[in-house]
Length: 151
Image (cartoon, rainbow, N blue to C red):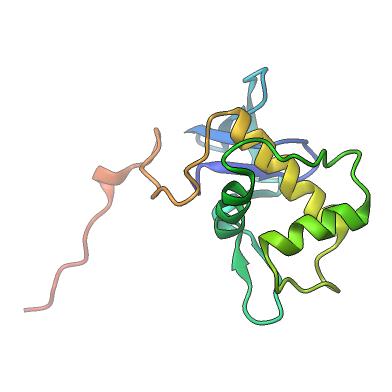
């Protein structure tokens, strides 16, 4: 799941990788529309597995943060509406999710986007944030050659 859920810069929401074309990816919106569209190499496409948030020590992967949020919210949508919540309310909730987050480098807009993404994933029925990635349609696993051991 982690690497097949994508964020595309300039486009709201999250997308699921459906297939790979010659010069693009075919993605499906995780919202109620489930609209499919191409995403091109010129789009800034980021897998959720590649995102982390700043802490006072090491960066923490987004999946760990989503898992912590799921535990606090008991697997349901956030009790706090990210669109209407004040910055103080957002930071207070995020401090419960990730107590040692870097308060200077993590902005209120980052927390708001995290909560929106969490709600999108929960609404789409995706709540196992620790699930291992399985090959997706279009992966050429059979074509990959294992390196041969030297004799």
